[in-house]
Length: 406
Image (tube, rainbow, N blue to C red):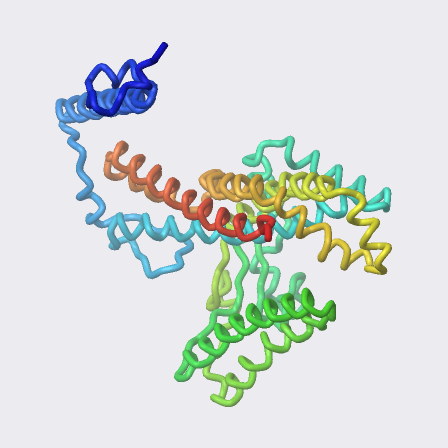
């Protein structure tokens, strides 16, 4: 007995095969579902467009060229109230990316440290890390953001505390950093003639550090000899840049903050809202990363550790050379999700007044222009693109850490 899948080629193709022939049926179903999906989407978009037109609110993005007419406290690029709404959105996006970048770094450091210490044989250290993890990950992050902001505003000294013959507060790092309840003030670099050579030297030093690390790793795998890479990398990081800096006569100077009037002037101001958001997101996400790291380490067979100890490796080298490289294959996939969560949770910045993308494009700009749909569509698209970039970059790193078969 023959089936339709056994039809000889000489009979040619017939339309009935799209339904009854198993070779084409799945493709037919997928095409039909795709067409239906696109049709439903088109109907929804058309209805929205018609309804907005009836209300006199056609979709229009020309408002991005209009002046924003509001100020932003902290900016990474030049901006004032006469700048366009598009530039205001870019300022908010850069503020979001700044918090996300710094948050991912600090959260990783906190999470890896806490995850390793949770497995410590020291009972007190392990319990302290357990309390930290269970406390932070079981309380909503917005509460931690508000609480951190309250602590910074209420406990840090006012600028007036730095004034007088016997001030109650003092600046840090040779009187170059001021930490107040209005923000943290740090020195601002002033770029002079020849500073570009210092920057290029610094970037080349980073490339040299990366190249040296790769070479040292290959040498270790081939010979088993361990080099003091930490000290060598530190020397490469400092020495070339410092020599070029001194040879060119210190082309980069620093404008340190100074108390003038009722507040500090000069330098760079880091608002307490940004610091509170950064710390709260980092410590909160670090609690989840700690559990991911702990699970990754426990996923490595105990025999690996015992074999490393039998070879005479110290616990620190066993962790760095044996356990963590294998645990990373388990850690990285869920770690990507935590980086994405931190980036998206930065939209809670509005709770402490930090003007990120949500507060500018999705807040003040939307209220001033009345373009709710356009602002929301743009904001959703930007968050989608940022998340896809982070996910793609981490997936590339994840593939590089996979076990390579011979």
